[in-house]
Length: 66
Image 1 (cartoon, one colour):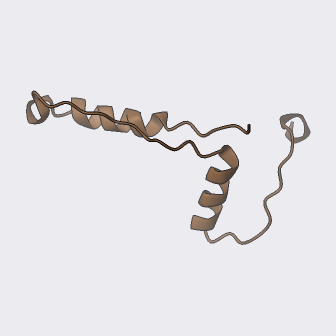
Image 2: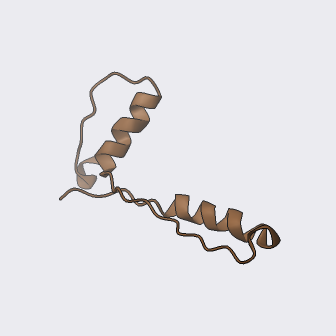
């Protein structure tokens, strides 16, 4: 199984927004989740597509990239 992308930044943003307005959300219950776990490569491909990159994506080991 390849590395999976962590959505902690999305969850953190949601919590900051909720906690930033406590009076507006008093008594509310929030379930903040994401049921998909795209791989790091899938995230990289999505990012490059959104930047209109059409070239090839090649992967190297961390040691090769130094």
